[in-house]
Amino acid sequence: MRYELYYWSGIQGRGEFVRLALEDAGASYDDVARTKGDQAMMPFLHGKHAGALPFAPPFLRAGKQVIAQAANILAFLGPRHGLVPASEPAQRYAMQLQQTVTDIVAEVHDTHHPISGDLYYEQQRTEARKRANAFCEERIPKFLGYFEKVLDRSDGRHAIGRRHSYVDLSLFQLMSGLDYAFPNAMTSIRRRTTRLRALQQRVAERPNIAAYLATERRIPFNEDGIFRHYPELDER
Image 1: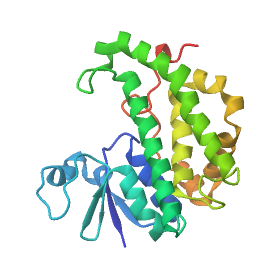
Image 2 (image 1 turned 120 degrees about the vertical axis):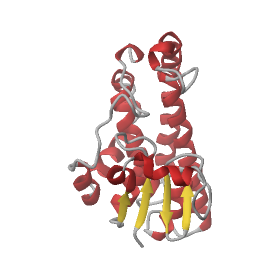
Image 3 (image 1 turned 180 degrees about the horizontal axis):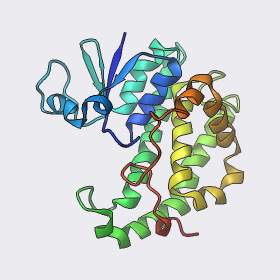
Image 4 (image 1 turned 30 degrees about the vertical axis):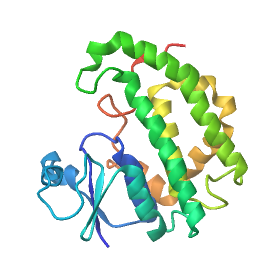
């Protein structure tokens, strides 16, 4: 099956979690907005199509199905491309972990838009500093400490059992995004995230991922996406 991935052009955002899974699996897909523009998503967002109605991108078209929300898309792709174990408990656990990734990604967004997504960062800079400070001091260690325990309870190398999964790919993206947005905060807890660091390196070296990261299709992190680097939000 050739998939169609719909996500905003010009940023990695939440679509990158899906993109990494497709790339790692060697799946055939069209990154629609990057070739046809963001307007290609509008018929779906306005309900002018058959199938389920997405609230926002990312969403994936797979045959006649339209599947939205990054975690839900990954739960769909995982069993079809060997990116999750076959057992139902393992798949539920993978979804649980992916939803936890979703939680911290939402908190990352709120460090630079703590009041409203409809306001510019410059209009909420004071509040952003307070939110980012709490995030760096409390939330990053809490979330990453949890994922360190997840790896420890597994085999120390993978999130799910003894095999690679889409959760590993998402943890790679999470670590990479946090490194970009909060380099000082991430350096300060480096000794407490040794398993996550090792996983991050292993994922980057997977053949399909390494090839993808070397292409222009891997858009660099920037200040329009979720992971943004504002030095004043990373003062340590």
